[in-house]
Image (cartoon, rainbow, N blue to C red; front, side, top):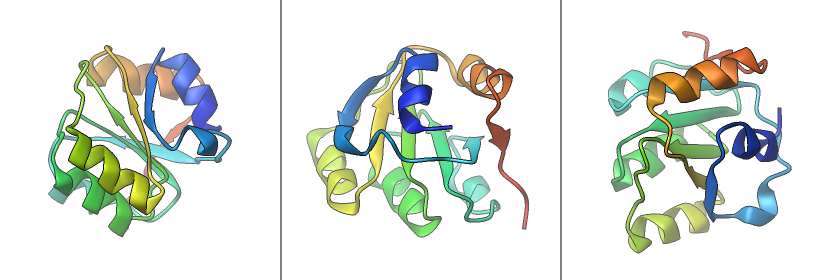
Length: 116
């Protein structure tokens, strides 16, 4: 699935790296606890979270994730957007809750992340 497809499915807005929406992703995980996210393998995953601080971007970077989707209408500060932009991490925001967002992505074929 491409990030562009995720944007469409979640009716999301792009916050940065719009030119990268063609990137392929193979799995996703949803969590507000970055320590839980670190339990997943590097598999070009999408991170769905309501956490809008630098730790979300740093965790995505460490895990080689291509995209972060902020749920519940959350919008990070400009500093966070610039950090993601400098790391090439696409940021999206959706008004949907985490549960609904994950469910829609799964229904459309995106798999969950695999444990190490």
